Length: 214
Image 1 (cartoon, rainbow, N blue to C red):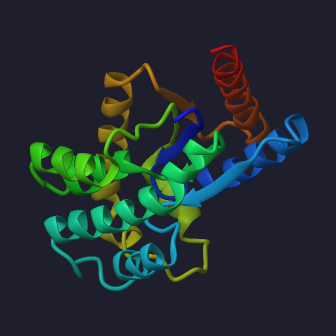
Image 2: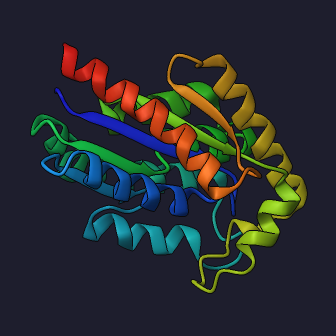
């Protein structure tokens, strides 16, 4: 596979969607002949989107963490096989709003599902697909939840798990990012939108140049 996989991670309300849109706009202007695939998890295919509705809507205690992990894995496998792998094989850039790191944190570290079990599910769903670059948009969980509360998409199940849960999510993401500094870039999500976008562009430009040189 010769394509590039870029993923965005972070707590609720950290601004991932906005920054993905900015990155796509910039890439299209800089590389008009470059093929881009913009996707999300859970989701990305018709079947995976159906699973998404099961996971992100309803009561906060609707599912046990293991059930969540299994649902996420099923959605991810459909996503990988039908969207991500084909795009990478076509030498395209794939930009995903969340990927397997979210399951590692939400259902694994914070949810309590055994780390070896989560790793096995990730391997089952993804095979050898690993992001080339992951941006972690980091911010205080209380601020992020306040931002997320302004959305009106009905996808509030995780937001309703409470501040303590999301503080743990933030801390776990930071620990994961520091453990995988080869692909993670931690960005202060309280910076201005333009400042964040500029940081992202610099790293993506460097990655694209490295790929072009190989």
